[in-house]
Length: 154
Image 1 (cartoon, rainbow, N blue to C red):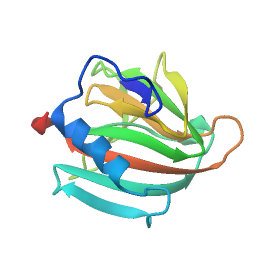
Image 2: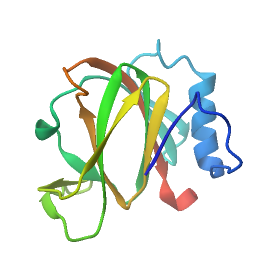
Image 3: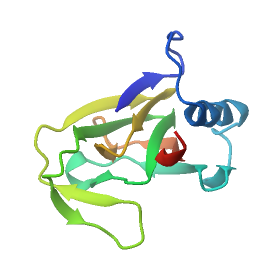
Image 4: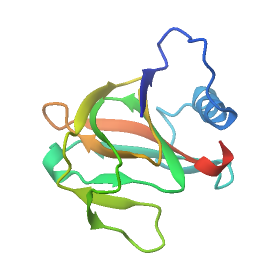
């Protein structure tokens, strides 16, 4: 998991080209005023879901992990709390919907939470269980861009 901000000072490391492409798409588009929906950046290899959500208490949000795609959860407005725990393969599965790139988990141990304000993002890889959509205090409206990148192209 990576937590950072578009306002942070540039670091000497470079993200892989696919991640740079995703961030360039965010920079080139007015995500604050776009219609909610799904936008292809590079077909189904890289696509963006613009979402308007209301955060909820963490105990009602489901923890999830993806095998094929990494998630960049970029907060456009509001603040969202996100849970994180490294995937060990020993976690209790809540459900694993067929033909969907998501597995939900329950009863996680040692989950850590981070508050993600506007302009900040978390990158979750296939070895990261994450719990998005949590309230950082009282529930609030959040606009976010969830960028999906096929890990195979990294």
